[in-house]
Amino acid sequence: MPTAPLQPLADLSLDSALALLRHAGLEEPAGDHGSPAWLQSVIDRLVDLSSRDPLTGLANRRQFELSLAREVDRVARSGESALLLMVDIDHFKKVNDTHGHAAGDLVIQSVGRALIETVRPMDQVARIGGEEFGVVLPNCPAAFGPQVADRVRQRVARHPVQLPNGESVSVTVSIGGAFAPQWVRSSPGIWMERSDRQLYRAKDEGRDRVCLEPSAMPEVSAEEKGLLFAATSWQDDE
Amino acid sequence: MSAASRSDKPTGARITAVTSGKGGVGKTFITANLAAALARRGERVLVLDADLGLANLDVVLNLYSKITLHDVFMGRVSLEDAILPAPGGFSVLLAGSGMVEYSRMTPEVGDKLRALITAVRPRYDHVLLDTGAGISDVVLFTISLADEVLVVATSEPTSLADAYATVKVLATTQAARPMHLVVNQVSRMGEGRQVRAQLQQVVDRFVNASRPQPTRLAYVGEIPHDNAVREAVQRRQLLIDTLPGSAAAKAFAQVAARMLGENA
Image (cartoon, rainbow over all chains, first blue to last red; front, side, top):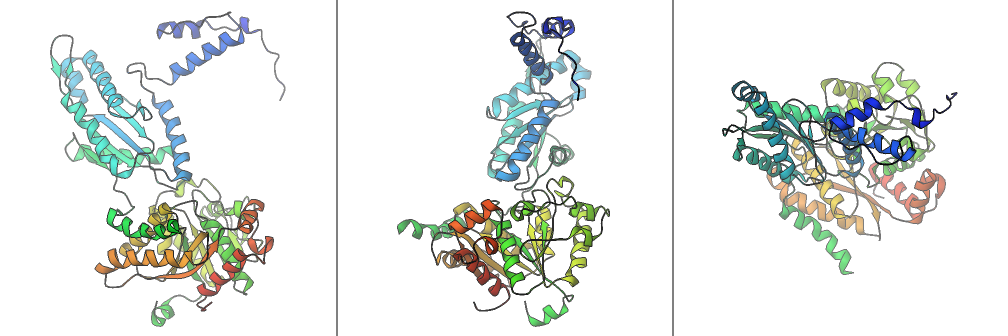
């Protein structure tokens, strides 16, 4: 493929890109305008900007889908257990209608913070829709899933959001979740759909609750494991 | 399975689902080499890559084909055109990687798999289904189509636990069928039989106690973890072709004999 000669970097038209960075409160990169290092910094800041949700600072849907795709690939061959939670604020429209959109924004920000504070740093929290959030929890054993999800639910329910006018708004969230199928090449779309189905179930069953997809793998009790692994002890003895 | 129920089966191939619980224990390698050992005995064998999402039979056999099971499912090619000759004297039907649309069980996927088994059964003596690892709904459904199950495990704890979980879920959710166990990557002779005894003991205590029809794991052999295996895997060849005189190659011949009901 023939390539056009490179324009001198200093001649690139970057006004709108730089205006966008300034508007987002990001400093213009230091260094010589038009130098490759400077341009790289501009691009890095734009990438950062395009992967974040402006209201909450969380990952946006685009970034979230990228993380999901990576996790699906990893789990397919490693067989590790990964959980996807879909979190939706209950009766959010009522918050907007009663207290106004500014209050609605504060509620969304507050739920976003609650999510970040209740999961591990390695987990990715994203705002994927109006009042909907997604959390990918890599390496989350099946037995811990319900606990983690319920911790998030309780945290939101127990912390009313303070409004500037002195009022406070209590909200709850409904949470649906599904584990990535181990040893199976799946897709982010299918995984999200399965978690979403559980979210609908949580809403149907009365909201402010957690519904996780039941696991196909039967529980192997500690007693069963104890007897099973007696098999390996003789190997070590010899 | 009793003689009476066997005669009720449609005539044709015996369908064996090869499964492992945990991935990465050598399920596909075992399937391919067992197929070659059966073919060497004059059996007409088809290996069907039923690992629809993570198929790597093509990698193990160093085969490449543009035509896959997906094309058959889509009605784009005939079954005849999709079945390829493999190096060991058997036939293969490759799934191709990334058949994401089949990663979840739907009535459509079920119908397609069932029709496929019906179509291949009359043409072979043995059909080995290389199922995906784990016990996703697609894997469980694929296993339900088989006449018997071959469980592949190693003596490593996670493999044992997952093999046990697989046996348990099959015993409690599916019709009783012959279940065989082959132990891969053993470091010394006799390890396989001990692994089998241990698994059976736990099955007896925790699964069979509450069930009218006891599940019995028939031991069909152990594959040593030797240099021959490493070499064959690296060269992407069958053991029978790479090092036919190796202990591992002989072990496969023995597994094949036991699968055919001989007291090898």
